[in-house]
Length: 203
Image (cartoon, rainbow, N blue to C red; front, side, top):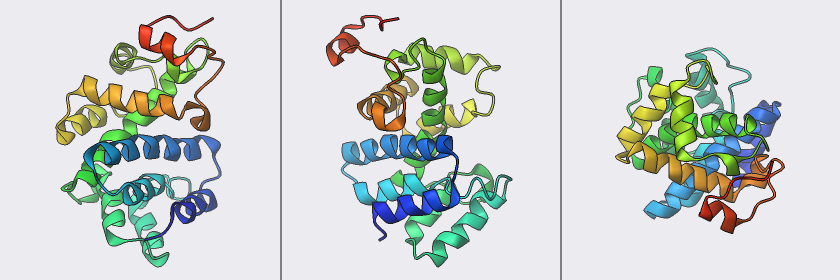
């Protein structure tokens, strides 16, 4: 099993975009939080989430991503279970999602990107201003973040066996806990207490 540092080095080797690197970290945040909740192998889930889109810049077209990327990971000695999970997060890969890891990666991928996009349009550009209702509202706005597949978000929660609102809330809290590293703290200067009480963010 490769280390988290080795996985991150692979991401950085093939991904130069800061936004895509942050996306890898956001998905890692959500997936690892689920691993902890479910009592699964946190290290394996972390590495899988970090690597899931590592080849997006060099293989921007389906089905090159993640099919050709999987071959690169095999050459780097990445575990077959991790590679299979990465293949399964693309509906066109023909690899069905069976394991909890596969279902969780799929469920968190688009949602993490969507929460990030919503954070950027908030007054303080902060994930602390995002809540479940704002996510649901933006999901209905087809003009917003067009590249995010709403169906993947809905189906992901369904496959995971978790109500959509609960899934959104869980990922949102995980990302808030790591907001600074994800570049999603923005100019938010509130406190965890004000967040819990529902107080509005300072403008």
